[in-house]
Image 1 (cartoon, helix red, strand yellow):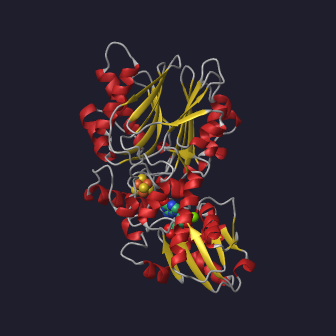
Image 2 (image 1 turned 30 degrees about the horizontal axis):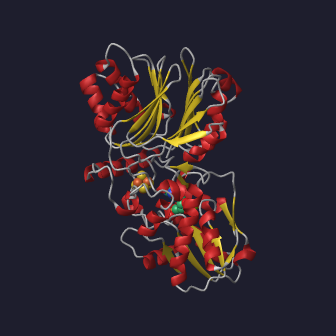
Length: 491
Ligand code: 5GP
Ligand code: SF4
Ligand code: MG
């Protein structure tokens, strides 16, 4: 997953971009970049956390009232700084951008751009392809005058050629800034207005929290298959360009997004509470003898509190997390990842000693985390350990920008909950039912008929994910792991 920010203000924008970037750090910790524009582009990108990349020198250097920021968790790409976003190209006008998602026909487009348009894509970054295709339309087909319609047609051209998921912010030098979401609206993108100005300020962000903390008071979703363009005099134009079935990613609510964010008019925290409530009902039917409910911090906290409440059980924060270690799955390499779970979490022995424990987590992917935690809790003296996942069994890779590993790595592939319990050494594993999971998130916005839940079902909503694409993604992930060993390739 990645995070993207775009702000157009009437004062220096770097402070707001930097602040906004800190609020989406959880969406990617591999690289960060900021690009601003006054009369030219100023760029700083690097591998690492926002707070480590930008020092006072860079902050002072990043001048201008328009800026784009990006935090990356790599999808394809070698994780090198050359692949860090935002990207810019000089022609026509100067076009810069960043995105969140994964372009599934990236290799094909890269070859096509070279063969047909003689454009070399120098990075392994999807957005370089998107920018070149966007630019190609403006360069080749624009009418005499550049108007908002030119921008919308260029977005339409992107929709025609680019497959997969993408929420994009693009700046066109001297013309304005546009934000758009792919036709299925797989990845989130929000638009904010700050009217506390003579001419309002505008912003785009992957999560509403970023716009919240930087003073945007009116916040709305960019609709799927739609674009919002702010021209150089900061007039706003909006257009629905194509209509496909809206299929936002359900995993944003389960795990990725911050609890205080609202995406597609659904609050993330409330979704997790509701998922907890629904899982509690299922657990109740199993008549387990449970003394205490303990969340795996941090994502599972909201659900676990609700589970304890519904089941009328004690809730205890029995696992203490070291806040200064990143998300475990972002750690390089599988063996370091396994160890790092132990460095990251420590049990409070008194909570577990002699108790039957219900551990709650958002999901089980490979099962490494859950197995280590169960062992940890048993070593702390627990009698029985039950494990509840408030999402359904994950069995398929995500091709839309979330690291889901290769197919063979999913512990739930071809295994029943009983077999999974045996593998991760739990006394029992309780998964959320798929339908309950979807209805639980949908409850806050019934206009969404269905979500993307391909990692649970293997049904990819864009309809163009062939076995060949899946095989290619598997190959890329394996080979990158081999070559590079120092990071898990993914979003
Ligand atoms: P695993 O079962 O792979 O050892 O780890 C599962 C844990 O990783 C869960 O606690 C969950 O919070 C976290 N996780 C959530 N989403 C992802 C993801 O997209 N990729 C990976 N690798 N881990 C994730
Ligand atoms: Fe989200 Fe899963 Fe769909 Fe990927 S496959 S977009 S993680 S729901
Ligand atoms: Mg977790």
